Amino acid sequence: MPLGELEIINLIRSLSNHKGNRKWRPSRLVKAGIGDDCAVVQLPAGREALVTTDFSLEDVHFRRHWHPADAVGHRCLARGLSDIAAMGGEPLAAFLSLALPRKLPQPWVDDFFRGFMNLADQFNVTLAGGDTAQSPHGILADIAVIGSVPKGKSVLRSGARPGDLIYVTGKLGGAAAVLRSLFSSPRTKLRPSDHPAHFYPLPRIDVGKYVRAHKLATAMIDISDGLSTDLKHICDESGVGSRIEAQRIPRPENAGLELALHGGDDYELLFTAPASGRVPRKIAGISISPIGEIVRGRRIQILHGGKWQTLSPRGWEHFRG
Image (cartoon, rainbow, N blue to C red; front, side):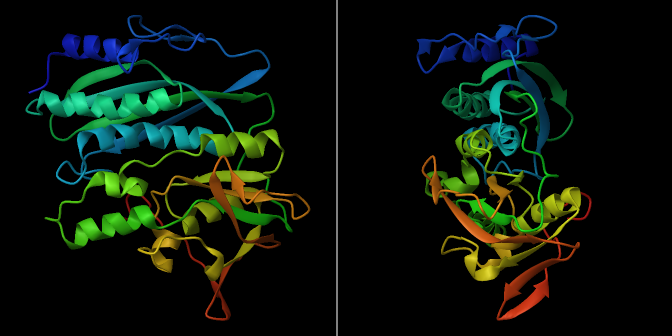
């Protein structure tokens, strides 16, 4: 069973004040964190706050017999950081509310925080607070992340215009391919380090900051629910349509077109940019691929097999499965 609540809080506080085995100083912008009723976070001059929240629920977003605890902690924070990346922002502080079953072994909790803090260290994110509770059933983790962006410079979903080109980072479908393998052979044990796209996704913070700072992107979103669904979000918010080409969608060898279009869980970025702009083929070491263009109207189409077809959003949607 986990340690008592106060002991867990002390453990979290200890972890949030260490970087590796060395003492480290949390962000100077977090004036007060764990230990007070609220955190005190100061924004740099001339910047606005970005705030996002995201659930990680056992048997919805992860399964204990498939996902090691450190991967669950990593993915929990990655979900929030990816939202900050999609706005072109810089993460600052994270807040974690964690509900744990009474019979959960404490080593699972330790490994969860190891994965969480390793990713937090990588992006200099301070764990500044949260909450703990006893869950009557499974594990529930709710992450909130605060970031910042220069005033008026957030990259929204609503800025795409006809004539803009559509780009994606990295490769799509790899995370879903791993999940499909787990579902098809539930007793199969995969080595998580061999499948980082699923178990240890890296949010594209540096890419998001670059396209925002260089005024490349007119609209942007992270690909968490699937390309087909997230592209529709941009089209809906911008009041436009789109046309993409199947053969231009980058994907790993183990992922077919269906997974690349609808699989989700990639945490790559999807953004639009004027055709007159010069978007690098790589940003921060991550490949950038043009896959189509924004058009007038509201139709979303894909060129596949030599024919233009309607592309319906078939990514993840809660309550629909």
